[in-house]
Amino acid sequence: MKKELGIDKFIKNLISKYLFEICMLAMIFAATAIRCRFASETTLSPDYESYYKPWVDFYRENGIIKGLGNAIGDYYVPLNVLYALCSLLPVEPWIPLSVVTYVCEMLSACSIFGIFYVLTGRKHHSMFAGVATLFLPFVAFNGSLWKQVDSIYTCFILISIYHMLKQHYRATFIWYGVAFAVKLQSVIFLPVLIILYITEGFHSYDKVVKDAQARNSFSILEFLWIPAIYFIAGLPEVLCGNGLRRTYLSYLYQTRELDSEGYGMVSFFPNLYNLGLDDYDSLLSTAAIMLTFAVLVIITYTCYRKKENLDKRTVLYLAIWTAWTCVVLLPGMHERYDYSVLLLLTPFAILLRKKILWPMLIANICSLAVYAKTLFRAGDLINMPVVSLFYVAAYLYVTIDIMKLINGDTGEKYGEA
Image (cartoon, rainbow, N blue to C red; front, side, top):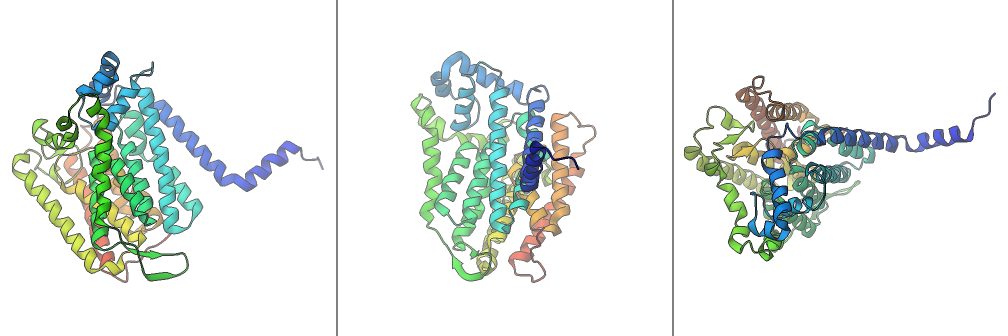
């Protein structure tokens, strides 16, 4: 029998011990290769040539100080600083933008691993879930192809949620404050924090014993971290001469885009306003906001009355659902605003809640249809009212499911992979 070479023995031992980790690294390599191929494509993005590249060019022509003092664009300060820093590099803007968004996608994958490891105690399942999110179409398309920045605020949202599930509430609010300072869309996760304050936290479970009395509440003063971080984040523009009002009222100006930019009730997002209601924003926008508020009040009341049913898994489900409620019911939603929702919903359905697999798949397919319409000019093939019907139906199914769960339906237990 031929003697086995030392290198072959080494490789086989390596595979035997670390095959899973090697496979994860191979998947990360594949995800990176996909981004490298997408990143150089700038003609498909409806925003890169019109907004992001001109913004970076503006900073190159005027310098960072003058550029921040004039606050070009409609983002808040952290993203403006990002574009300003991109102007310092002697490369096309898509290169640093793609790198930053991919780094944040990787951080999100790590947070997904942490979140579901806390909930399941299954390391390999959770790690695979995190890495697999890098291959979700909306994740791959959003940053590298569209040159959007949704992965940046989302990674901070996920870090915040991880600490929330660990009941590290100060860290929860600090990281949420960072996310909110990056992008206004982070506000869709604020309701779950308000609910947790009202319910005095949630029941804590260890891996062996369910301790029904283990709750960890937090002070309302923790919410002050959000405006504090928002204030600190605005200082670069203030110090560059942009002015307090123009800097700190940036989000207020963004909310007025519904009227000033002529978006209507919805901008290619598959919610119920695509069902013939898009052109009636002047009539319906206030009603839509109040409807959202009323629905969130109802779920808050239900959670308070049934707070003994709130555990870590239900709280994550609640965070997903309340954020999803906001993007389905609020006016002025854009194509990408469910990015963070689907990023959490997808592994949650697969690992913890298989009965919502079909709604999750439908929501992801609808998201893919929207990206196809926006990026790949598939407008003739995509019927938005039909897509919206399926999307809203998926949301309603999940709504019924979570309401049963919070109300203690004994048949609504979690399943694990």
